[in-house]
Image (cartoon, rainbow, N blue to C red; front, side, top):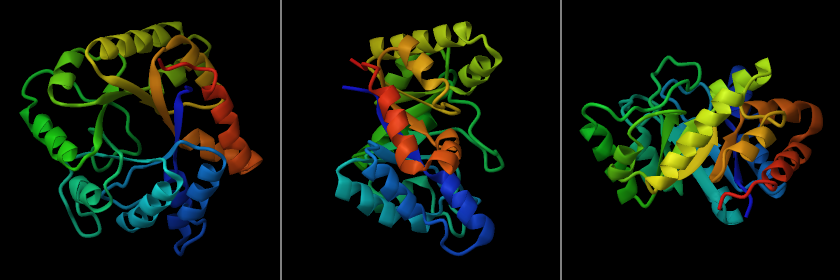
Length: 254
């Protein structure tokens, strides 16, 4: 079985929101990805509503159910509710995604750029994990490659980690990714030993995905948005999704 591809459609919503109205249509973009064979759809609704918004979620959830694939909702479980954003837990109560990926980003962050650590008092995170699991969601925790304490993550009740691959992508672009690949591979190995599944995401692209999956074994899912949507501007969503699936098909997560 190949590594699953979950397409992040946030960037489609960014373009829509920059003009107002409904175009480009997030649902139509997600449908095109699923018709091309994507294994799921990822979204990251933020409190500032700058891309995916709460109103996008029910129709997206219905769409992925129709295709029999997974919806992955990312977000900060500690971000308080406010007008237009009821909070991550409330959103998940509404649409019951297959997976929720908890990310420690602040309201003002342009994009997620660091993961959780598992030192000190993690009781608050444990209660959040329990709340999402009570909804029937698989819980994945966004972590930096090399993070310590993965056994604690498993003890919290998390099912998976998602390795933050931004530093790998930067090193790959600079022509020397060996050390970052080794760090990611070791993190994946330690996660599996702790009983956690392994996802990965951030700045993965057609250029670097094959190299990543060739060296980091056991990756169950990659979520890719920014590069994929950018590449699709030239080649179309169907062709681009199929190209990623072909790369992922060369990896064995077992």
